[in-house]
Amino acid sequence: MTNTQALAVVLLSAFFVYSIRFLGLALGKRLPKTGVFKKGMDALPGTIFAALVFPGLLAAGWQGIVAAVFIVIITKKTGNVMLAMLTGVAAVALLRIPIF
Image 1 (cartoon, rainbow, N blue to C red):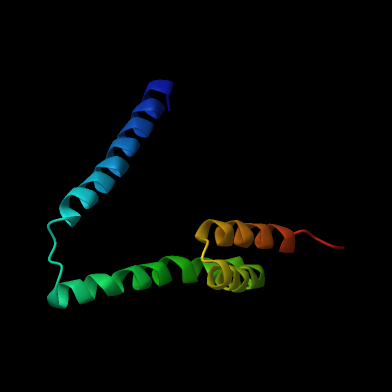
Image 2: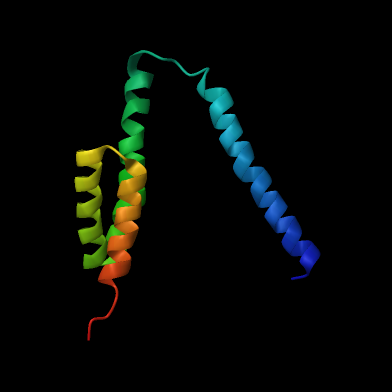
């Protein structure tokens, strides 16, 4: 792959990613705010989160599960999602350090 091709791939990827984000923001204002559609949309974030997170947790092994417990505790105690994410990353990193 040449430098020109690599640059084209990066620029096209950025275009598509930001297009999807922009369209989501622009079209999201036009969605119904009541009724069955709203109930379905309110349920989506949890299901999407579960679909994205649980396979990764299982693949990470016991370290990932321990980190998830830390994340839940930190989020419940502080409400700070960024702190919870940093705690989870630090927990996995520290738990993967070989002791012996």
